[in-house]
Image (tube, rainbow, N blue to C red; front, side, top):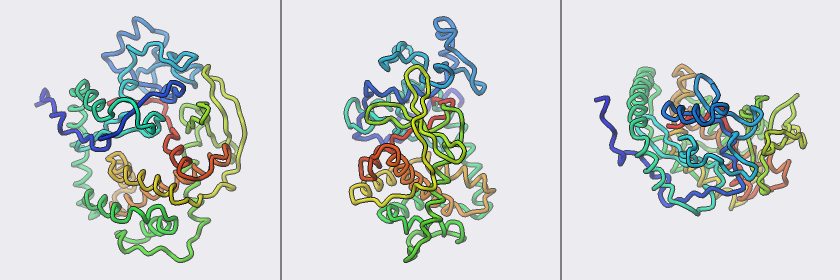
Length: 369
């Protein structure tokens, strides 16, 4: 049984159908991660590039310039000097395989090249990547399925279980409402106050408390900027392809740029209390609505809600946690749009919302599947 390899046709690639990806020559944004080196890849790096192999979080990974910049193999023209021998993570990006009780291919929208609809077929690329990683995907699926089945049993025992298809269907039916701040505010309040939220029964308050919603959005956005480690904070690649970092220091947002050598230069600051959720025009709402639709179909979004439910000791209904998590993700995106507008005067229209979808939040170690 352990040697059985899964049927690759079972992998859900529906999100990638009709989409193309390309690597913009000037970008290099994905090289600001620290990719894990798999066991089968270590011998090459130990033999050819021993000084560039480091131990990180109990895993081997590639070194970063000055410990905080881009990968040491990214040259000054933002080209990979070991492209043909780059690690699995680098080959996989911007495609991510989320493993739960199934495997679903998702497109990392932090990649600027995912927004041009040019280049190679994302669907074809995902299938080829899955084929080369079939043994690891099979093993990961076996382990994850066991964990998910245990999770669902605990939910049913606690009386908080809901069918995933029904949760997603309910969001789809009310999709246009999720671009309305009044509706989002009511969903968030209901998820905290009601025993079991029904989106169809939610009626927005005529007069919402905008201060409370702004505070919730700010708290969600600032949470990712609390670290002093450049490898752990949001990165924004602007129209001139500069890497911009954002950190919270002494209750203000500090904006810095990171250059190709790993040097950081402070450019300005902003008071987060002076940044508020934007009013979106019709085009911006359309872009946001499409993104919400994508989020709603992602197993990673559902998995994040499941993680929250587990941390709450199964005391909240699954529907409350899922709708609440989705609402927080939406206002987080909108608040960051206003933050970027504060520094770059980008506006809050459709293009600004698109820019926020490519607003990368890296972790110290990016692990491939």
